[in-house]
Amino acid sequence: MRYGIFSDIHGNLEALHAVLKRMEELGVERRICLGDLVGYCANPNECVDVIRQQSHLTILGNHDSVALGRESSENFNFYARRAIEWTRENLTPSTVAYLKTLSYLEVEGELCFVHASPRSPADWYYISGLDDAVDAFGFFKQKICFHGHTHWPVLVVMENEQSFRICDTFSHTLDKNQRLLVNVGSVGQPRDRNPQASFCICDSETLSVEIVRVPYEIEKTQDKMRKLNFADFLVSRLSEGR
Image 1 (cartoon, one colour):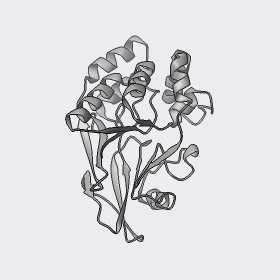
Image 2 (tube, one colour):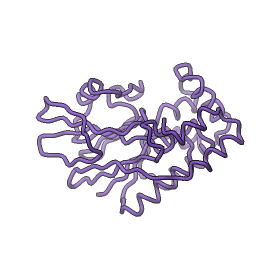
Image 3 (tube, rainbow, N blue to C red):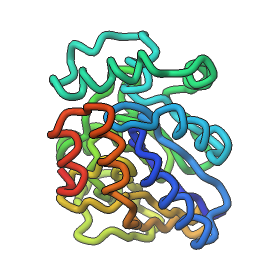
């Protein structure tokens, strides 16, 4: 099965369309969304509508949870808080109903899917470095765990249950004694200084993965945000990939 796994759309409709189009070109058979459908950008309802139609499995993200009012935005920075408050006020009833159906973690065969970390998924831990990744391996049993949350794509390999390393490339095929933790990056707000939308392709037969980058109409997304008086910082960061 050829999977397309994507995360952190954050209301960026142009980036979402570009990613889904590229997945179709690459022959993706099953699409998995790892959460944060909303927040930061101008089209939360439209993105949820597309994902509801196109994603075969969708995970709940922390911005989705805050938008639903399940928890406070007090841990968000100033810009994220303003954006999620706007988002919450503008969600349609059908968007809210869909977000309420999403779970924190799902497993399919040798693949695990979560938004933040397999360690207590509802607590939104960040996997920000190798130490965090080493810890996360203890909380899933499958060969590969896919996550997002940091908006920064990275592959971490565990060998023989004792050796860990960050891959220096964005593709890898598992050997029999390896397991893998994959941050698929962000569709709608990449932060690795590459403004192109990010997602992951996985072949569940060969257990191979590859991070794919896709250009999209950034200026169109930014124009929408400006018309709705989104903060300049949120607008400009899209073209800078930060």
